[in-house]
Image 1: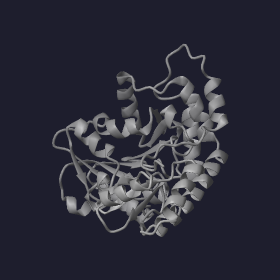
Image 2: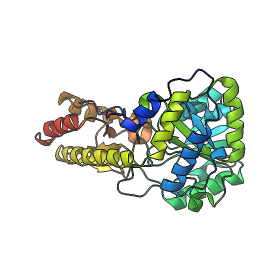
Image 3: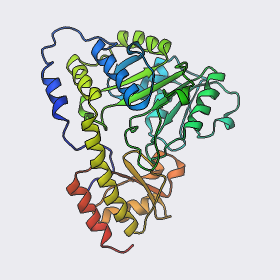
Image 4: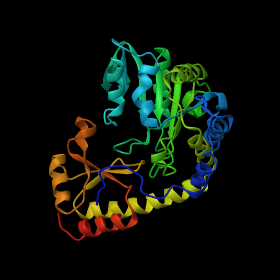
Length: 337
């Protein structure tokens, strides 16, 4: 039972597949900035689901959000001598993006400790990978204010925003977070998890109009263009909420089953307020827990892969079929720790 990687396994919604199939006659070059339909669909989605006030011109489609995360520092002109801040426990690509740009990556959840140095970009991720932390609105607003004082950009990776379990996530574009201004803020949204579209490589970035225009200019010269059929599929996905609610219910059930099994096996689940992972510990080195679980046929990710603070934790993904999740439960729940 492979619960180590957060790769979606459920079918892509039929409405998305149909939209893709209906747009396969695409002899011309697609628009880097996206069709009016896809930009409007994203803007409407952000308003409808997250109370964000953005115009279609403030939206740009991207070739999967991992691409944007890796290249955003470079696209923003960040370079040698600059600092990119990312969460202390984090998806490794934030740091990789800083390295690609020749900048310095700093893992920190406390910005006040950074001093007056040349911070150019701050990453937020809520709900977070790997530990499922959901950041309070007040904390996010303070980060935005801090960054604006230094003319730094705050980029919020919101790919798990639909999956808040024990806390309510907020977008950085909500007026209570950004103060009603899009200056210096970007929200990054993925269709991989919410719509089971990881294979489509489809996402979007939205926010500060000047930053979005700058990203568009660079990306169109660099050939960073979302294919036209995929843009049509994005319109369908962002315009429909019913399939997202169905997928959320699936993950909620799997979460309950796996949480019960892990607790029965002697693990404590910490944080995990949102996202598609459980952050669990038996208060032993992560690799000891990984080995114990592997002996029972359950594969998980060691917490130290995401930062030193994960040394005693494992990350358990909810992205497995119901049958595989139940099989993992049955193997763990019946065995004493």
